[in-house]
Image 1 (cartoon, rainbow, N blue to C red):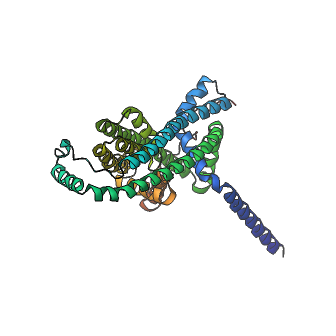
Image 2 (image 1 turned 90 degrees about the vertical axis):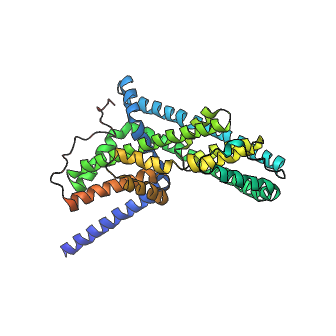
Image 3 (image 1 turned 135 degrees about the vertical axis):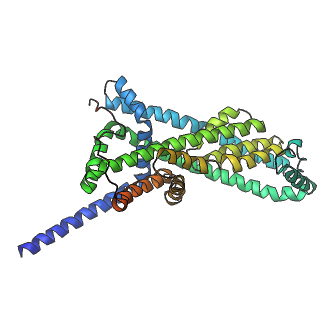
Length: 367
């Protein structure tokens, strides 16, 4: 009788714990992505936080507050400039449609023929379009209007992302201040599950996330560079400024499209139809395509995953989780690969656990 009573109490206690955990999950569900982004921001900028901590003699609250201010300035000033760029681009696109809706296409410029491999064919195709310019413009007009609607929708998506990012920055304050304690609690939790192997798993996660951060930054630099070259070739004003905007928008899904499509709209509005078409083709085939190859390559170089596994992790992560999947996909595959290697391949020696530390190895500061 006593044993049955104890079992009932244990089952009731377990059910209560499960109910509380599930309820907490529902409460935290809207904040899962901001918390993940806050953790990534803290991890990526932890060395800067360490420097501030030393300069401020270990005052964690003040250092965390300054880090939040720095993040707000670095992240939101570019988005303000981007908002101005988008509004100007939409205005130029509308004005161009009003002025050129019934106009004819210009003849192809001479440089089109000189494009290697495809120049002659492209020149002939363009010439045929000019010969049927009325039909071509009638076909092109609704597509350009659809592009304007698409641009507006993605602008709203960027605004939503900015709001989510603001919440992440606020959460980051507490992660900066209490980051060491949070990591220590996570390590203890992992250790309860996997023993001494917990530290190795955390090292795998840390190395993979670091590789993803460096890969995303490297990809943003590459996209900004090729975008700046394209803007300069097409004669778009302030190509360096637009390249900087491309760099910051590269951290968002389809972000660079807002810049090069806006540049194309400006070219169309100025009557430079040929360069506008060039900008759309260059943006589609070069600026918005290279990240699909550069990002997995850079991530794979810094992690223990092969290029193809990293590519699958990045693409599959984005499809499954959205943009945060760029981090989650490769990280989950890296941890899974490590576990499979440990359980199935059974290496001769396990990696010895290292002393616990914060997101980076640091000396515990003063309170």
